[in-house]
Length: 133
Image (tube, rainbow, N blue to C red; front, top):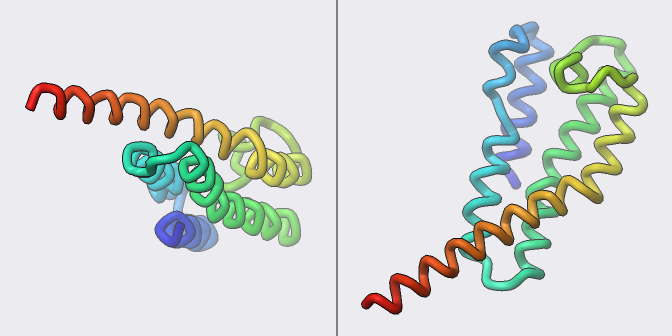
């Protein structure tokens, strides 16, 4: 969670400093979330723990996104968080509300589904390794 939040702050500071979006995009919270999703999908033993982890992985992302969008909304200053390629052409208000709703519903549930797939594959792999030993 901390790594996601720190990367989000770095991303925000880079965009505020005027670094081009083509560079800022490499400060990716999504990559950290993906690594966490694979790791927790493989190591957490229960569905409930994986669901909780999915929400905890999305929480810092959602907080950073909503705060950065709030900054853009309040200041009128463009940031990468509301760049055309990330906002699907909607206004700042709809984009912010969309992150709030998505961060509590489909985003963590999407992570959970992928974590379940990772768990399924890794648990089958562990069984095959133990069976062949």
